[in-house]
Amino acid sequence: MTPRSPGEGPVSRRNFLRNGARVAALTGVGAVVGTLVHRTSSQTTVWQIDPLKCLRCGRCATECVLDQSAVKCVHSYDLCGYCELCTGYFVPEPNALNTGAENQLCPTGAIQRKYIEDPYYEYTIDEALCIGCGKCVEGCSRFGNGSLYLQVRQHLCLNCSECAIGRVCPGDAFRRVPVSQPYLLKTSH
Amino acid sequence: MRRGDALRPAESSGSNGSRRDFLRRNLQASGLLGAVGALAASGPNVRAARSSAENPFAYDVGKFERTDPKFIHYEETARFKSPRPEPRRLALGPEGALHVAAGDSVVRLGEGGGVDFEIALAGPAQCLGVARDGLLYVALRDHIEVFDARGQRTAVWSSPVSKTWLTGVAVGEDGLFAADSGGRAVLRYDRSGRLLGRIGEQDKERGIPGFVLPSPFLDVELHRDGLLRVNNPGRHRVELYTASGDLELAWGRPTAAIDGFCGCCNPINLATLPDGRCVTCEKGLRRVKVYSALGEFECVVSGAESFAQSVPPGVSMAKAALDAVADARGRIFILDPLAGDIRVMARKREGASS
Image 1: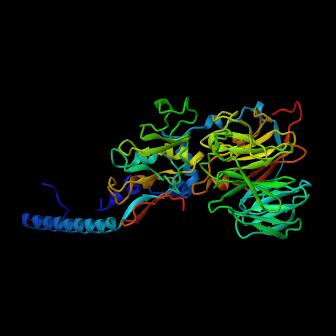
Image 2 (image 1 turned 135 degrees about the horizontal axis):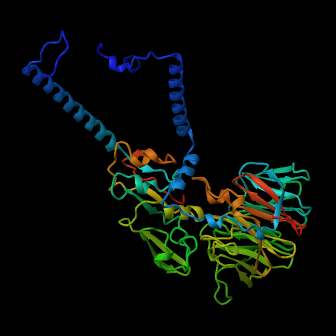
């Protein structure tokens, strides 16, 4: 038995159990209240990336708590130039302007290129393959119109109370937005 | 030992905390706090610079940002700040007076670089040109305003179509040529503002492929040989047209290498030297180069390493687009809107080291 200091009486089994029950009850109440508070705030707001602040640092691909990030590249078609030499699709100095893997910038081949008419091509993101690394976003933003950009896809996001990516985002681009307007979209207007 | 003694390790270990120890511990703690504070206070750009070095998905064009010194044939002889914020385009007057379109105004600079006169506009000037007789033609987005040499407005030429987006002006003896990015054509006017024709529109019978403009960067220059120089950025080339719209020559190729035009769509702005050589400005890899009259790469005026290359997030490409003009002495004035600077570049003397 653990030696006790002089002046402290022995703890009876009844007191021990009663104190334990109190602590457990308080813990339970705290957990319920915390969950309610979190759910209330997470039901009204969600995480989103401000595309005008995003620095394309690559952390969206590596910091999300999900195995594959909830951040994906999205495409604003009304901003796109439908370029034959799309700098979001091709590596900086491609061997040829075709769909050869060696010419593609995306590390997972998540961008589909489709011929429209000379010399225009349409580019589509395959979200199942996109890891949100932002490499194409940087290529498009640096040389082109910035029609490719990153967004948190809400059907994938766990809406953590503290976003693991937002915590390390160097551009402070993560912010809470109303659940009724969960995306910060770029438009030509 | 009393309860709580464990919280006082100095006493429990038998040594009293001396004043020296106390100060040393506090200095260490404040130093640590200072370092944490400095990191937290560092702006997004500082943190971004750190993160880009760690980014396994970095978009790397570093090797194209360094210019082989043997290609740099110009040196900077002067640099001054734009007289007004948000500078956009440059033009030279008949006496070599530099005109700067900046914000909602056009400023003419005097001999010493001071403001000679300023014209306030109703909106941002997209481009401008000065005739030999001193008349100033300023294109706002969808129309042209004409000013006399004293800065008094004498005429307004309204827009020919609703989607007009004027981005270049060249003035000749008999007419004016306005590059319309929205309409993908160069508009030919007489000096009274009457529209005479459209140049550069797709026409298979005349062998004209048409302008490809992913973004509004269509420029036009008129040389004294009578030929227009027009950039076709989506096709990565410069095209030469007669005033009547015949395509005489086209040159340029897409590549990030120094002899071509980089990215999706370049060059964005042009200038012509007195002997017909062409000065090109690029975006993405922000650099200024010179090509022969037939389009052979000749040299670099200012390489990519001499400009800030990353456009800050939220800043449109149009507000970072380099522009250039060349004077009768062959000097090249380069406007860098990001830095708000105008550089004066002169050809290096033979034998000068780079």
